[in-house]
Amino acid sequence: MPPNGAYQPWRHRFAALTAASTLVLIYMGGLVTTTGSGLAVPDWPLSYGMLMPPMVGGVRYEHGHRMAASAVGLLTLVLAIWTARSEPRRGVRNLAWIALAAVVAQGLLGGLTVLFLLPTPVSVAHACLAQTFLCLTIALTYATSREWTAAAPQSDTAGLRGAAALATGIVFIQLLLGALMRHLGAGLAIPDFPLSLGRVVPPLDTAAVAVHFAHRLGALLVLGSVAWLFVRARRSRDARFRPLAALALGLAVIQIGLGALTVLSEKAVVPTTSHVAVGAAILGLCFFLALRARRLLHPHRVVLVGLASATAGGA
Image (cartoon, rainbow, N blue to C red; front, side, top):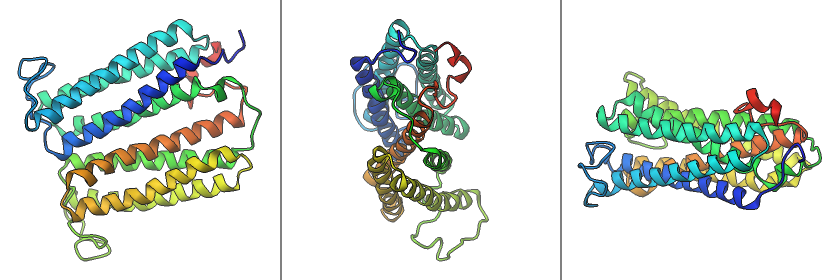
């Protein structure tokens, strides 16, 4: 068998379904936070001692999120077993098991947030692990794609790779700040926009204001890094990067607008929850572009951005 294995279209499609379902799950998690439904079901793993409680009030958001999380967990389990049985590359097999471990850990963190009454460190860890798991599913989707397994000709993507990696890192930190802001209840600590408490720089005399203002500054860094990624993609001879880089930039602009609407609408459900989901989509796009750029720069290496590099020698 070739060192990169054979392209298996159905497994690739199943991995893509898992990644798409994860993005939907992140949106549903945002709904739980936005509607204040995190403790609408006060027990875990059952819900009011039942598998299916009456779906009324905040229960429909919290229990609906649990049901969606279980579905994503099942998809990940199937994908891990499928990959273990049919994948010749050890690095990809290990990546599938890492994704399964991550989704199990995510479920446990979700349970702990309920049992310990939404402690901020656990809630923020739960949010950040969700973004990490999304990246794991995207890596699995790309690693099983025709482009990856075909060992495409080398492309000069060195500058683009750096821009995509930088954007990915900045977006992840921004999402971490956003999670911290949400779980500290600081979403309206600065209730005006575009000014901050009527100033360009507000008095940073409380943790809530400081975190909120840091998140606003982070939005500018995200916009700048994604814009630079778009510029690098436009300059690249490889046209495959341009549409997704343009989409990431467009979403970054929309994301700033959603952030403004979140504040001005006093955290209305639609803009606030959409703000969470669009942030995850931007991260996913930047991560995929970084992964693709790295793969096409070194098409004959096993490259999984370090997630399974320790065991990739047998791939």
